[in-house]
Image 1 (cartoon, rainbow, N blue to C red):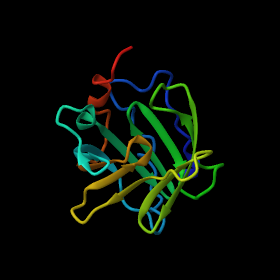
Image 2: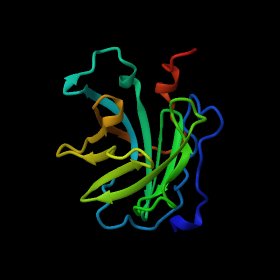
Image 3: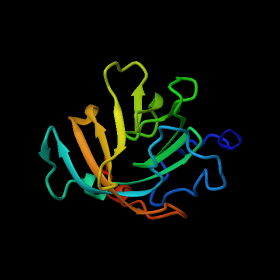
Image 4: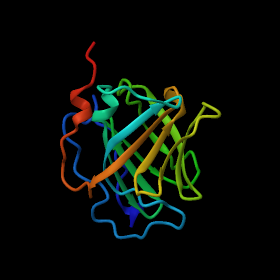
Amino acid sequence: MAADIPVAHTPPGGYGATFPEPVLAGCTEPLVEGAPDLRGLWKTLRAERAGSPVPDGDRIYSYMERIEQCGNRIIDMGGGTIADARADGTEANGVHDVSAFDYTTPIHVIASYEAGVFVLRPVGIPGIEVTRRLDGDGHMVWTRPDLGGLTVTLERISDGAGTPHNTFFATRPTT
């Protein structure tokens, strides 16, 4: 059962150049009703910001994420972070981790499944909803209104098993 598996957290500095081992691999609990099946490894296919195509060469085109699901639990690994939550609409069971922007700033995010859409609402930031849903072609559409109206369409490239290379980490700007 999903509740029997410890919550995963981002390691200090992010998980780096390879994805960690899957967390929910042994979980056999069926997905809850209304949850879109987002399981797998996803890679950016196209991206728009405020309705205009993001230019070729932008680092978003190297973005990959792995999603694991079991019961009402969902784990999203992307950008070097691990967001592990129960999509039950409560703050207590939401994401309690760190921001992908610096790997140190705490984040608290409420997670839910609503009409076939995975919705994340950051605590203390009213009006922001980050969503993931499947389109008619089986692609995942990820919206980030907090990043200038970013909409990314991703294609499922594998089941996400193992520790695939994290291409996005390699393009991370250095300071």
